[in-house]
Length: 175
Image (cartoon, rainbow, N blue to C red; front, side, top):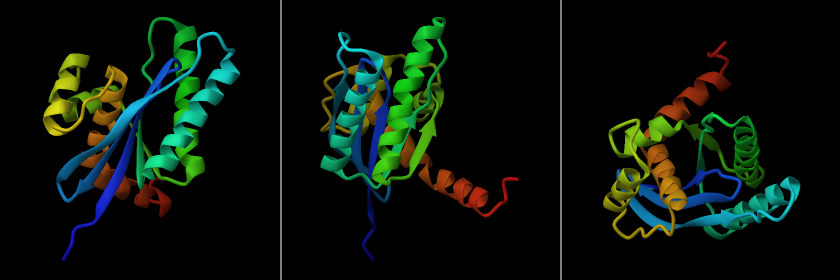
């Protein structure tokens, strides 16, 4: 009996650069497919920048046709304006795959780091090194793309539990 292959898109939201990474999962085997960044122009207003992110992610979704999408949750930093802008970019990162029709899961940065590196407060260089170890053919052009691949890897490891929890909630068991 052949094992089904699932294609996962991981997204690391950011207003300047939103990283994306695509992996295929067959059983427990992970395979690198593609990665990159969607960029917005600092010279444009917020609404146009959010549109640039949406259009870029919509293109990624059309090009790589993922079965499932995972998005990193927003962390709150010291600057409230930056946090709000990041939250708006994250909203686009959630909306684009929802409009595409793919189920979307969310993971905290600590969960991603703990899953990929084994430590919840790992540095970006540690995440990138482990992504390259887990996906030897991956050559992310930026830390954002490496982080997006880490989000996809995290979803590959936790997707069964996420689906079971969603089924319980859908059946009314989460009230």
